[in-house]
Length: 399
Image 1 (cartoon, one colour):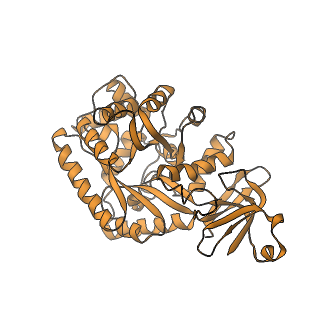
Image 2 (cartoon, rainbow, N blue to C red):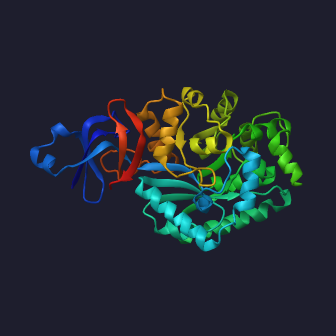
Image 3 (cartoon, rainbow, N blue to C red):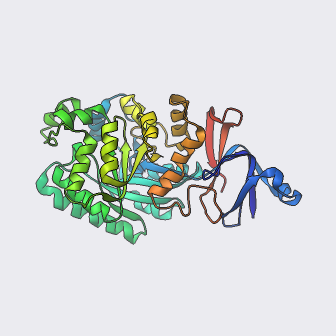
């Protein structure tokens, strides 16, 4: 048995406990939480004190761990069109051994910082060996691209072969569509149908105004980028990019559409899109990656609108091609600094149990409840008086 005490314990499932404790068995399963003053003297004498706050392990709801070798390589503020150009130019700028070394380093760092589960995007098998050995749970979304309609079936078939390899290594994996602007409608529908057989999709949605312009009017920097490279663009619909995605799902799936569908980024999501998602999607989740959004677009999602609409918000780090670090606490601090009215406890819920629910791992992860094994994380630099993260806030796994 171990007992951890701190200035604040955040069970997430209930109110935070000032000068609290969390008790676990020797395997890390939670036994109970409470106020440290209620512990008997013998228990209190063996308790381990950590300053700041103790929280359950995080869930990183969106990452591209394969791109870890690109740390520091990209120019900030390029917009989506410029970012795509940089990806095309730099993705293979490091050899395979270097790419694998980088992703293994970042996987270790994520776990040490307290990430207990991750929804990760893959385009190849380079991360599979590391994932198979990691104590962190990962669900891999094999991301598909392709603007030639005639290649849709072949691309999906290749993704299914990659997923079969993941399964052999005991990694949960399934195909997923990338975004409206990198796929023909045929591939978007085929990839979505294949992915939803697993019960999950992860889809880049409304990441930029350029994406909205492309779908609504066929204009803007992203449209010009694709035309300049001789690539076809999606049909112009006059609607939002999220409506376009959902309309394609409706052509291959019975409505309302079942499965856990994670819409990632949501920088330009609006009430119209939200209403459409609520109408047609049974279990939508909405991932935000604030530091990545600032890196590429210098813009953040409309979190107050998303909260008012009662959306299930999760937090991701995206990749080191669009972020200076992979740190859930840094993402939480970014949210806190830009939206100071959002309570820390609410942001923490986004970073823990909401992501666990998306992955269907909330029976074990996301909260301090008896019988769960979420991991125990100390947030150093948490100001108990203001209930806010300080400038120096960081996290470390203590169990």
